[in-house]
Image (tube, rainbow, N blue to C red; front, side, top):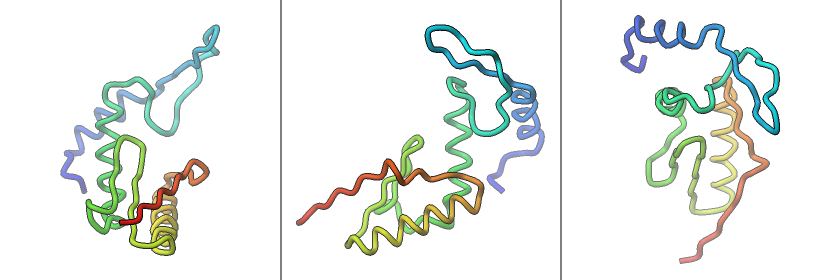
Length: 114
């Protein structure tokens, strides 16, 4: 699908199999298994995220000038507030259909008048 050979996918999956993590605050939590998502702090995580988002968002993107992906952020631009709301709904439902979550609670809307 993304042009990645199956042996490489299996190698990456094997690296993450049985992986555990801890939460650090004033002291470390007990180790727990990570079954979904990317491992925070792994040098491979940003690359894996970009590959996955490229494949997942391919059918959602209209053009690079109005939809930008950066790290785990999504920037949408539109001519009107109504059009922007339509895009947000489209992206949210499209990502959720692929098992991802778009948190709209942190969404910021900036209006620019030219």
